[in-house]
Image (cartoon, rainbow, N blue to C red; front, side, top):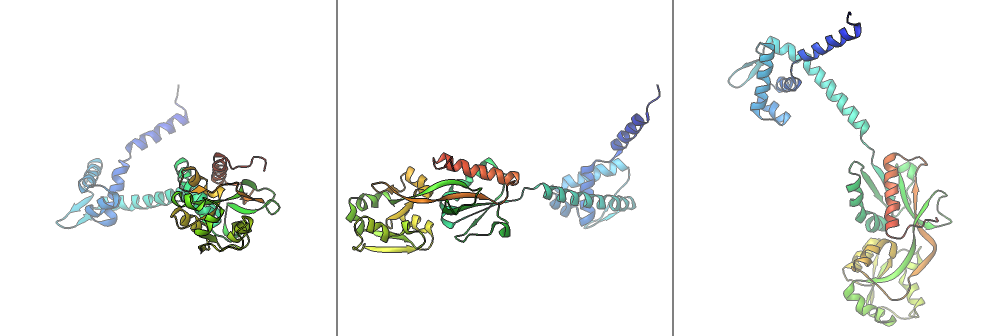
Length: 319
C-alpha cells in the first residue's frame, strides 16, 4: 500500500524538526550576536559564561563550521555566523513580541473596590490577606474615599456604600446593619465603664461627621442623662479609623461601630461598655456592583466579601 499524502507530509515535517539545531543554543547565540560579548550575553540570560560558551560550541559542532572568531578582547561573526544571526534574530524578536501580547491579554484585570476610609481600613484591609492567599492571581485595587465615587467614571467594579435602605440601589446586597457601642482599651474600660458618670472623667474620642448623630458624643451623653455635664476633654478626628486607633492605644473612649470592630471585640483588644448598643434604624452597609454580569475575577471578590460578612454573623440573608 502506497503511503498517503498526509503521511508523507507528516514524515517530511518530522524530519525537518529533527534537523533543526538546538533552539536553546540558538537563543544563546542570538544574545551573543546582539551584544558581541559572551559575558554580556550570559548576564542577559542569567547564565554563566561557560554555559553560553558551551551553547556556541554545540552549534558550531552541529553546523560543522565556526560561527565566531574569538579574539583577545572581542569576538566577530564568521560569514556563517552572520547569516545565522540575520535569520534567527528577527524570529526571536517576533516570538518575544508574541509572548508579551499573549501574556498581557491573559492577565486578569485588577478588581477595583471603593469604600469609605473607615470601612477600607478597619474591615477590608485586615481581611484582604486571606483573599490574596486564596486567589493569588487576582489583583485588588482599593479606592478608599469618604466621597461617593462614580463607579462608571472611575472604573470601579464594586462599592461598599453606607446608607439607608431607602437610598440603597435596587440590586444592592446588605452586608450588615449599623450598631454602635461604647468601647475602650481593656485597662481604660475598667474605669470608664464603672458607672454613667465615670465616663465624664475620661477623654472622649469624637468622629467629626455631623451627618451621623449616633456617632456624636453630645447625643449619647444626652441620652444617658449627662447632657449638661462636660467630659474631661474631647479629641476630634476627621476619619473614623483614627478614632478606633486612638481607642486601641488607650487614648480615650470611642463610639464603636460593631460591624467594623468585631474582631477587636472578639480578641479583647477593645471592650464594649455595659448595656445594649444603639441601632441606627434603617442604616447599613450595602454591596453594589457596577454591572449585572461582572468579570469572573470580580464575581470571585464579590462572593468573598459576602462570605466575610457571613462568617462574622453579620450578613443579612433576607436583604
